[in-house]
Figure 1 (cartoon, rainbow, N blue to C red):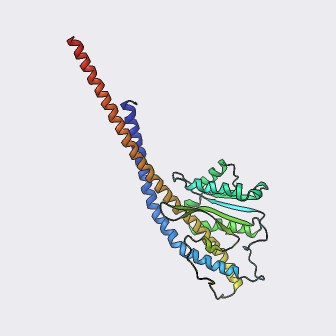
Figure 2 (figure 1 turned 180 degrees about the vertical axis):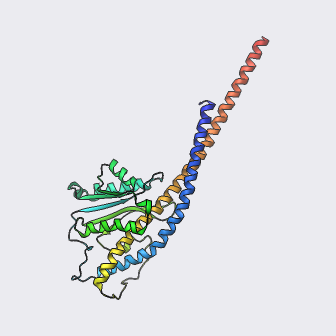
Figure 3 (figure 1 turned 135 degrees about the vertical axis):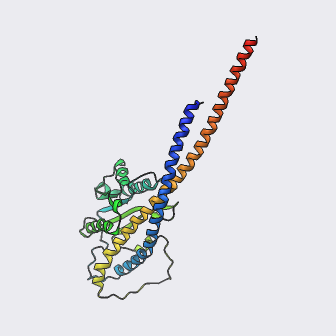
Length: 299
């Protein structure tokens, strides 16, 4: 059994760790509320815009150019992995990295062998994690979270959209954690481009009547609507994915720090029990030594 000094040192160390995890839990809880409000306010608008986008893109006539439309074949793929810059949030980052590796090595295995699969990382943990798995990162955005707003996200989204429009890629997927609540984050990989049935990416899609098709009146013209609404909708979808990831990060970190604080409490309780047992044994030994000495003097 460890001596009393070692146990006291260990108790002090665990208490210090417990204070840190408890403080991180409270900070994450405060950040989570703001991030949760942002994604909850964004979703209805983003989902409705996705519905309109799909309706517009599916009704385009062949004479209207849509540079974000599906191509006849998929020759090169881009995967965008969205993580955080910091850790201590459970499996939040590792799950994204694992899914990205799976897409590269399994889903797009044949294209990857021909070096036709590129990976863009958003977040430092994605860069570090993918490199450790032997996945080359073609581009990364590590400073996005320092000033997170629609303008900064739109710049990244536009760069990715341009790479598709220019023919650099035929398929682009996003891999990120979709926020459900503080304890649950759903890992998803969804199609970003080409423009498809984006209504399937809703968190809780509403059932629709059989044969239901929304109808829209286009003014000034379908051509001008396509030029404006499709790029804007894609940027909104990309921004929503980032907000989902941010809210999921804070929820995952809050949950992880809550568990760590509880585990520290249990460890302190066990260490105190061991300390009391060791102290009791030490006192008993001292009493036995005194009694043995007294008996020896009497003899």
